[in-house]
Length: 277
Image (tube, rainbow, N blue to C red):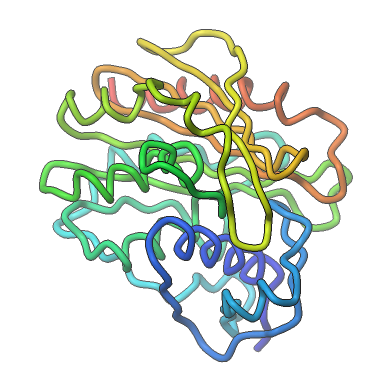
């Protein structure tokens, strides 16, 4: 039995997401206190590690992280099949395979379960900024935790010894049209340029152009101080909202994530259309 590298990275990601966006939520077995270098960030400071209480699970190789799906009802198999399982050398995580959460669900439990699959930022600011720092799934869970909404999420990673590391999360949300319109609404993004975060100083959300997909699509970078730590693209269709989020990789990849992002989004959109059309 051992603490797997992927589990340690994922635990760091979910601690950051849940603490910043959803209120402190701690779970798991005894936690390591040594900062864990994660692909999404260079690693927390010692004081941040102490505050967040990094989680850890002792897992066999390929064993999923023991966090139950908090959703209600039976997961939609078509929605699950709409998620990417492979992109280049990146593959669906063994420890956190793709899953679908049917709302309503306990917010803390759902934040932990989905947050293990979707990457987020510890930055925070006005409530409207949450869908860009923490993710569209987080905004849907926070504002529309109601029957008829489904959230599918997965995380794809490359092997730890690859020359071109890649970690990214994908979410697909289905629900009433007015809720999906809310997720894709970029009104107020200018108010998300002076954000703060525990242990990371200040940050900002900055849009950048990408090729059009679906009914509407847009992309943005999340800065912590002067460094980009997240690249994300959101695609809206009449039936669902899809989000791809790439974290900062370590070591630095050969392909700029801003270049890679629309390629992943295009592949994810094609798969979702094939499954959900």
